[in-house]
Length: 189
Length: 377
Image (cartoon, each protein chain N blue to C red):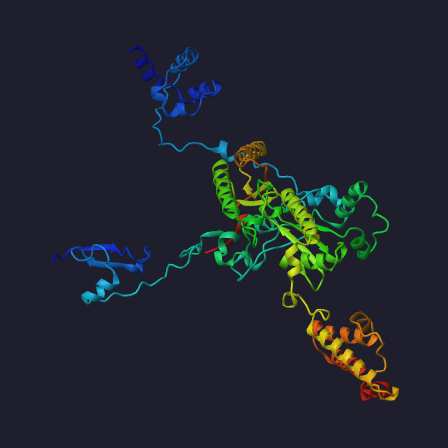
């Protein structure tokens, strides 16, 4: 047996956290065999820790100096409790999501968000809020005052025009400006 | 070679003057960084040749000297005007400020409002976030465009399109009487680029069966034809159709259906006469065995009464001399008996119908005790 030790991540369990890294010899464990096979061989394995259950919850820093907006500070399971949805349309209501309506709206929202993020690079202080009334799409959000008002108005008109052509319905941008990034910081972790 | 020598001379030229000359010709600062490769214009060369005689120019190593960036520091922040709500008069018309549905604007809404959830003092200093820069307030729908003043304006604008309610249709009963057929369909409003909704094609037509001109046979046949569409409790027929792709098509289909069923129910086929007692939908005394028994009983009683001489011995005094079936069926006692037993069989037995049946039987058979009891009670 060679004494060479290789750090490997166990591939069959959830990957990521440090506690689940296993030190094994390179000759033995290339990939993790199935549990039944391991039991047959008389090997014992420990169950995975399942510590990675915190989707969307940001990790705290040592000095507690990582700024978070209100949106980021609330965990996803708080949606509808302490924070509300970023997409508002009737296909999310009960009994209204048939004919793949909810899926179409979601796909359009992804398109809108990607477009806005690319057209206003680094300028949005909040998430892109997409609200729909009838066939009107309203894109709302907070924007920094880095650009001149003239440029902002150009970008608004450009975004509205391009999104209208893409989505084939009127699109309205209702953005508001904030002076500093600290204005939207809710807490530091 | 000529160009190279002039560049070397340039390196030792007076720096300050050179800088001045660059500023005059509106050159970018990239020149200073890459001076060794710069090809001068004729005008600049003339100026440089003059300055060469006075002082040597220092060679500037790119990146060594810290550049003077006061130009950027001095850039002023733009003056942001105060929010609109600080300049509003108190007695303004809110409908002019917020004419239509819009995202919440902190700079326009004059009242203080906060939204958010603060768990500890570390979050936003323990204070609920105010309206400024609050994305949560921008997400939720608001009704600032539906204030009472707005609604009043909407009503005033819509008033010219309204007509008076027709006279004579004040109550629901009057509407039901003059418009017995009720057609229901729905239009659906939802957020999306299309206005089509598959649920909008459904059409429902309601009418009361009593509003149709039907005899007993036609009514019975109508009910049998429509099946579950008829509700016996409310006497209502409800047709619903969503089989066609369009609302108009479904509407036409139901109208056709109603017409066809109506005229079909008035038809009487030859085989419908073969309907026997066990095929009947309810109890008919006229075709039942009870009728035959009663007629036979009365006729027998009359024969016995005729045979006995004295009038006092007669068992049933109300029986006429003519004991044909028609004259017996026309008797009041027989009709009462028929109604009582039909009620018992068709509507179910209860105290009322049973006692009624008992009295009818006593009357029919001339049992005096029953009649006396009835008179006493």
